[in-house]
Amino acid sequence: MPIEHAAVRIVHKPWGVGDLRPWSNIDGSRGAVGELWFERADENAPAPTLLLKLLFTSEPLSVQVHPDDTFARAMGMPNGKSEAWYILSAQPDAQIGAGLKHQVTAQQLRTTIQDGSIAELLHWRSVAAGDVIYIPAGTIHAIGAGIVLAEIQQRSDATFRLFDYGRQRELHEDNGVAVAHPWPLPTQGKPTAVTANRTLLLASKHFVLERVELPEGSSWALLAEPETWMLILDGHAAVGLTAASIGEAIFIGGGRNSIEVGHNGLSALIAYPASRPIDSLLQSLGEQPVKPTHPATHSVRQFAGSVEART
Image (cartoon, rainbow, N blue to C red):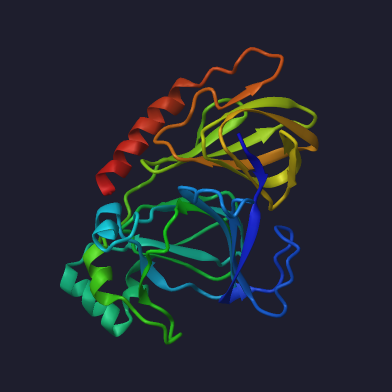
């Protein structure tokens, strides 16, 4: 099974930044970098189901909404777009908008798009490093300035802009109103320990997102799904023969793979297409398998249920 040091696609955006450190040494001084997309190293390989990105914001992004699978396929797209954000860093006043302050009718929503007041209707909240926000398809949302985040999403560029802070780009009023859930975002599940080294950040019907913390010098077996992404948050490690450090990603094509952790330890995000975490995903070599905790299983069922109701 392939293990690849992911290639990086640079996406320039007017709201991006010039200095991407410590997450990347790419120089954005000649053109602000808004996004880094992690791609398969083999450009002829089948397109993955999920897309992993880093986003860097110096200005607010547009207020937007994504369609679900049913609507997207009716428009000829392969699938819709649900996504999750993991906040890597945030300035003290940084905010994200997710869902509305209160429920409105379709006509009221249309009016706020037309007069630009939809940004005021969004429910804005402060964020800090380590926060996790799930944005199911249909959720009206926006990312504010001063944030660096990792995004895992269904692989789709289906985006309907509702407000763009005067940037003179096209808005998508009709499609936006058609797909939007014009109400507050339901309360989301909290991160839950799966084992001493694994934390479940979220489980949706499209993907699972975990954070792992592995001690320095340790050795592990990763029993990966056919599509598994690992983003290094801190430290460094080798997965098979592929090494990576902070801000780099590894694509794992499934199977049993070794992880050798460096002297600084390892903190990483792991994402894969599934509806619940894999109990046997990570095992310490030379020791008995770590049993999952029962509260994690219970929490996943509750969270997955709430997601199903929203999509």
